[in-house]
Amino acid sequence: MKKMQISMGKKKIIEAYIFMLPFIIGIVAFFAFPLFVSIKLSFGKVIDMSGFKIKWIGFDNYIRAFVTDVQFIPMFLRIVRESLLKLPLILVFSLMLAMFISNDIKFKAFFRIAFFLPFLLGTGYVMQQIIGQGINEQVLMQAKNIFIPEKILAYLGPNVDEAVNSFFGVIVTVLWSCGVQILLFLSSLQGISKSLYESAKVDGATQWEMFWKITLPMISPVMLLNIIYTLLDSFTDISNPILSYIQDYAFTRTDFAYAAAIGWIYFIFIMILILVIFMIMKNHLYSFDMKGETKNGKSR
Image 1: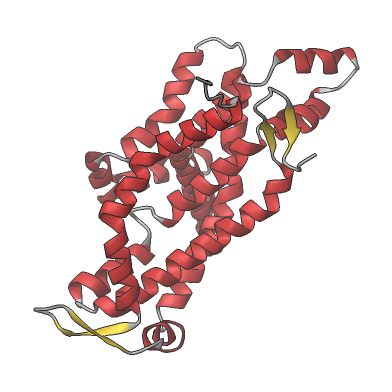
Image 2: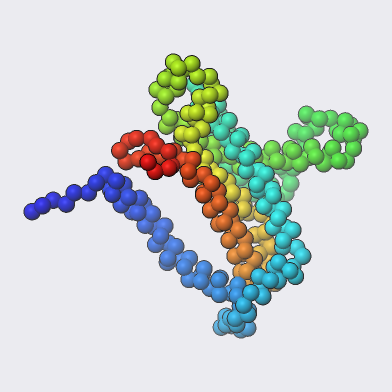
């Protein structure tokens, strides 16, 4: 009897599907029907709450979001602008810290814990309650006064004071949001063979050249992963006012149809943004093929 041969590449693909199987089952079992109802709701109107009967009204809810609602679009644009501004700061800061703690330095384990700790604390309920009471803002004010005395800010005027507050607010947000990105960059940096750097040094490459020619291309897949993760984390953060706005329409005003419509507008925008980023970066990604050769994302 002839034994069936499966190539290494097919084995890897089968393993990938096996790992994804629980997620796929969960999507089909728990999310498929709610998603269908949500889409149906966004094009309809609830006419009977007891039986949850929906009447088809076309694109009225979507038109209302863009034409009638004077709060949604400005809030939406503000969230998009803030998320896109924070993205490069978080990525650059995370990469710098990851490169710093990947070197052979003293207290390496302490620095790894210290940089990841804000992420763990920030996801806890107790810490969210503390943040909700404004304690983080008080600490921020104390930190600001240490670097820039209050009398100097009062002399420079309210515009400078507001700009300084915004700057420190962004710094705190970046510090709070880069724990996972640091770990991902760190694992990617440690996966780069030291022989590549040694060969580059023999050829006379500088640290700057090695970063652009070796480090950055080799971590490009993780860079894409971090970009997508950071965007999703920012757009779905519990403090995001868009999510509160959608929840308010759904569960306070019981306008489920309109809440579903603006929720889908938000979701579709995020998906389009991620797709555009992926299309831009896909030809610049390095991957490790099944034969153990490193190659660019372009097929050869």
